[in-house]
Length: 326
Image (cartoon, rainbow, N blue to C red):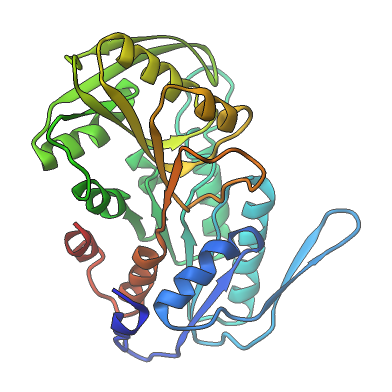
């Protein structure tokens, strides 16, 4: 589908759509706007010498459907910029404000797993609500229940609409799908069920955050091509250890599908030096330009988000998108 095929349905009392982007998500926002068939709105970000920022919307948004596209990787500055943009639009009498957050930062801190720690995903939700947003559009939250942290609609897109069409282009006759941990079994099972393939689980345990002590493989991978499924890849320690263990158990090859390429610390080098054959990700987080990326394939989410903006604007069903893309 190209941008001319995305139809603009006119909602009740339509005052037009305005698309704006945060500073570090422009690489994706421009592609989304291109698919949508509309230029990004004019917004200037002023930075003061003490580090404060001030976004200025350079055109009228009175009564308009306003969409702010901003991933909160980083994540503090990007989150603060998003909050300030929302506040600016609210005070400029925008009709309906939607935050399009391809990658929702702090999503891994969704519960108290030990004493005296914050539930940061809930705090971020509270900040967005306090800023004045009316709706969130995001993709592959680390835990589905984060949607319940909001008191307004959350359109939770899933990357299956991106990755399943890609999988269909591959030879899956000898493939098994695997989860790199017990928490991700639901995601991996979706692919295994859709393609009628076996499911394997890698049971990991940690000694501390971002450091995996060991992995146990549950299931038969002898002579199989394994595709690991996860929502994000951070330091890549889990993926690389899982790939090694799967190969030790007789797997023929290991690839990984991960929605959000956070890729912090030594992640790029680990992937380049690992036994992973390929890592397939989306563009919800930008890759670092000076890092090795020979094994990394990036699939764009721009068309899916453009269509999500269209159906939000026209009050249509968001769930129909997934059926069209599979």
